[in-house]
Length: 76
Image 1: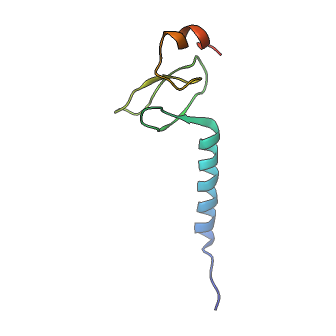
Image 2 (image 1 turned 135 degrees about the vertical axis):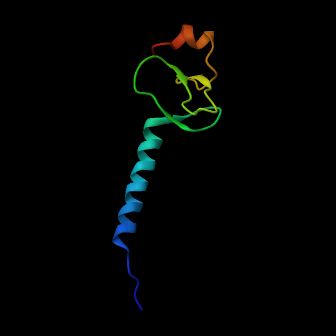
Image 3 (image 1 turned 135 degrees about the horizontal axis):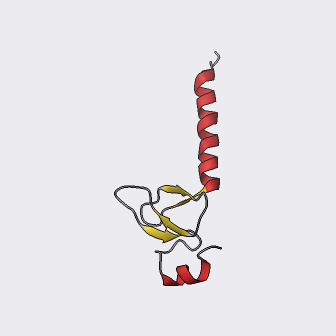
């Protein structure tokens, strides 16, 4: 009694695991809706890309974007 491994499904699972690890390593969740957001340059002012969210927040401290963030770590 043996088991057969579907090689295509196994490769798909490895790709999915690698993608999840990359997302975990290179993104932060939006503090409001928790969708993964990637920062690829610029200042710390972030805006959630989800059309229904659009929450503006600070990449460094994950708080709603405010004057303290603007003054203390705009370009950290």
